[in-house]
Image (cartoon, rainbow, N blue to C red; front, side, top):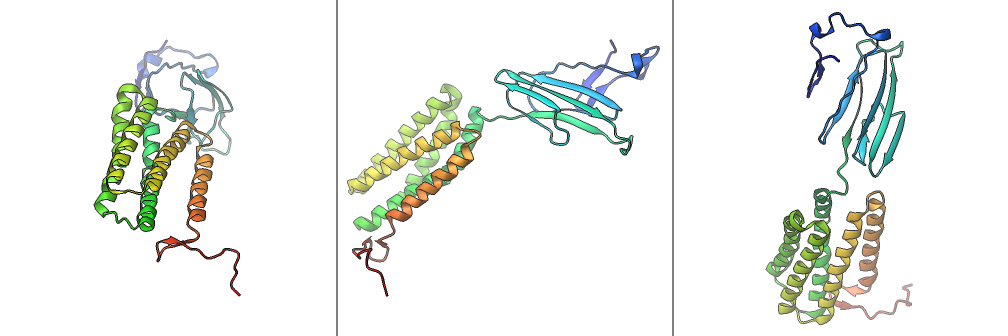
Length: 261
């Protein structure tokens, strides 16, 4: 055993600690146990290194400079191994670095951060439905009323963050969804008498909440599912409004089968 000091810059061994120490075949074995999260790496200039890194984090992200020669991943943790040999063409001063950092996918804060990214889309789709209802029903909606509805949706994310720290993400998500959706519907019913569009806004709020929740729980397929879902929403809006006369504010009665010459 050799006394050493572990710092943020590496392992330091005092020179006097190596006095009268002989290493078999000029090799040195180092074993380190560390706790915490963040980046951990090993840099070397040795001729050969055999490195084994293992821990109880199920989602490591290894440095791409030198990827492990073998890895084992499961729900309880990981194990990775590297074998690094110095090449003759390499300068002896070249430093080789291996290591990993922790992926935080699936944690409450990472899911909240991902949820916030969908906020603008949530507000825009709600405004589009309100605008369609305003044009078709000839019931003008004041910009301030749009703003208050959008502000209520923004409050959803503050509620989600505050509640998730006390009751967990899942309960916080659905509690915030229920409160904000109920508030918006209660407010819209006060100035919007068209029950058809109020129901559409209700189903839009609930449907988007369910869709975004599914996206947040997915990891590897989230981008694919999200893209397909957004395309489906866009297609629905375009198909629903393709015969809408924006100048007249009503559905065009023109027969689709009549083609212009």
